[in-house]
Image (cartoon, rainbow, N blue to C red; front, top):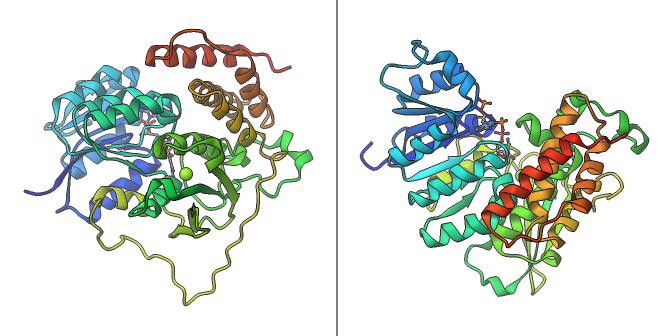
Length: 387
Ligand code: NDP
Ligand code: MG
């Protein structure tokens, strides 16, 4: 393990966490897992620590931490830390080369900034942190001279397609979108679309929140804002196309009319492996596309009546630098309210629109202002009676 990359996996128990572990499991000589975190799933985290001999683990949910503290759930050699301060301590206390940020939600912003501050390269799956505090993440990455590698499949595709070209020759990027679970549902039936239906993705196996975001296409809205920060783009350079097969992960269009794409099967192990081994390449841990079999790929423009969350993301982009924070916080709360049955599927865009129309600030632009806008949006969106 002398030359192994030392890895932190933040959000190890989730869907991206699981896929990251698959890559690490396949290349034990290349990677050493030195720190992991989860929020509540202590049992799964303990079994990860046992399998990979992890030295330090953080459990951010204090109730879950207190429940298992002092019991022999975790291996004796794993140091256990509790709460968000425990996660911070983990990042500050262990030395690692790369942090894989696979935590869901905007709460990933603080640990991402801490890991950058420690000089670690970042493989970033989480998009909410970038949508909230993109300018601060990019600034910190530059200051600390670290590599920021996007795991999100569309951004990973764009990152790969941009290699070796001049940025000034870029015309636009075109994010592909599957259209999610409600792609074929008649518009009149969307009001009755249930949490169970909205969490069934046709192509990808992912966490609940992002699967609902795919159904509303708020996920693509977040990804537009994510792309703006990652690749320093203007609104007119940011486009979306529906591609039901999820094989082409995005396009890059150059001024000379040439369009490049990155293709692979719809599995997150491909972009994760790209980031973990970057800048090298190693054999894939699962089969890629097989052109001996016929492959039909379709592309068509998104219907904004079906996907109002996508149109609202363009409005949020116009409201930069605050629109992203408001859009993201309102969406996170709206999805929670939808999943707990208190609002309808079609109320999700209504709550986001309400927040974008009514929440604003005159304060000077700073991380503190963004975080207080995030909090204000959450409180108001939770309280808003949709009627
Ligand atoms: P999951 O819900 O499957 O996993 C989330 C992980 O974060 C779990 O380890 C969870 O712990 C932990 N977590 C949850 N809440 C908190 C919190 N408040 N503080 C700290 N940790 C927390 O999500 P996904 O793996 O699907 O997604 C992770 C991120 O990656 C999201 O931002 C998503 O948008 C992005 N992404 C995901 C893709 C996918 O294919 N899944 C594709 C592209 C991007 P516990 O299990 O204990 O609750
Ligand atoms: Mg994506």
